[in-house]
Image 1: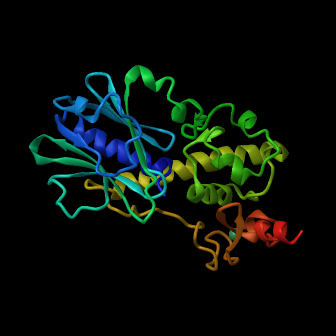
Image 2: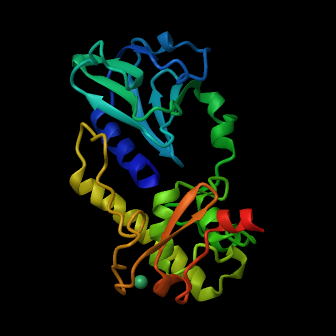
Length: 281
Ligand SMILES: [Zn+2]
């Protein structure tokens, strides 16, 4: 599940490795991956990579002649650099960018769903690109107006994951952030007091920066298929809370499984499965 820390480390490592690299050709073997047709991928031939950066959970590969590859990894995509070309049996690649020195940048996707996507845009199209236009402020550095952004009667779990509210946080890191801030996933943004708002801002910063610092230490090119995510709460239900040793619980909410500590986050209450309780009404 690539979120801000995973996409950011990908952008940083690739940016360092590929600055100035010459593109020989590009093709999109995934039938559904490429969402644009003008300019064609052949426009990339002979161009050089200028920068690779992140916006929200998107990657932007900026190329010398004002062309930009906009990539969304969705839930199972990876952007990986290899020093060899993919073989004919390669079934995971959705986009191949062939580079000088025999290197190849591949958008690969694991699992049965083909959801990751690519757009080849001209730089001026970026400003009106719908996928970017509706994104909220970056989660890092924590926006100065976080209090206002979160002043909504929606549960924190939904608010923090909403890319239009704040960009970069998804289903994994939201659990870690709320656990770190000692806040219930169902607490409404507008109900936070000053102390809780401060805790939440600090938790966003420390959690995301901590993950990035971890990746800077352990991740190298080629970026592995599975990143070593330093999660302590998400998907750890049934295990002891790292802070108080209470058994971590989980609850279904919309399409998500939320992990939390009943002692640290919900005043001892075990949350009811909202999906189920709605069905039973
Ligand atoms: Zn706890």
